[in-house]
Image 1 (cartoon, protein in one colour):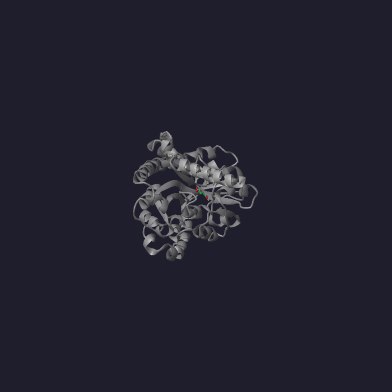
Image 2 (image 1 turned 90 degrees about the vertical axis):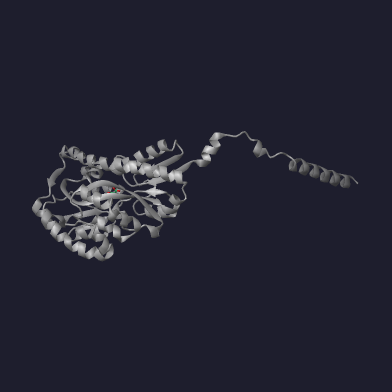
Length: 344
Ligand code: LMR
């Protein structure tokens, strides 16, 4: 009898509870409305990974862009910048962007050549004589064609940022004639053109990520490298090298790239803000890049570094020798694209 009463009571309480819950007004709808919560839903965070120091042309451009976007969007869009290869190195950043783990990056042209061989054109020695030639080519047909190569890889090129012309450093001997390269093992970026450039001079090479260059030069795993003055100064590479040759033999620049899907799915007003911020940053950074070359003054004060200038005659010989590379890489780069490279 007791058991039957218990079950009855249980059923009645169950019905009552269900009834009460069922007819409760929706609690969620009754919560006070909170502006900040809506703001959070609209918040857009873009992860931007790169491999250089914050005080280099690319590092500064990334920070400038990030600040500008915050201001222009009233804090709605946040560009999170990860410098110094702290998230991804040259070897892993492209895959991370394609997966969507980061949304934007600004790899060097050499790194881009791992995606599509056309980008090797930018690594050819003596491709450009001066900054104006570089700008004309990249702001014109060459730039357009290079960005088109990214379509099949789910990437979208949005700007070119400049760093400058590359110089040579070594610890074994000054690099004044073409035969001086023989004893040097150069750290290089991942680019078959750069590898051939040094092999043709009888030097050996090792591909290493940028943030491992200092250490490898210091312990003698490699004895030379090529880079822009701003990268040599910001990474203090001059401290582990004895000689520098101002050669301007190659160019270092960056493609600013988004994950295409991510970009396409951004609201159009966000795309507009990013486009305008990129336009302003590009203009700003490309003016700054030239100023970074003034960092040479700092190097000139360093007694332990001997600075030489490549003579006109050796430059002429090196240019002559480089022509073979143009022939060799033409099939990979494509004849059409090669016509936009002034060359030696
Ligand atoms: C390098 O030598 O790897 C650097 O030039 C890379 C960079 O992004 O500047």
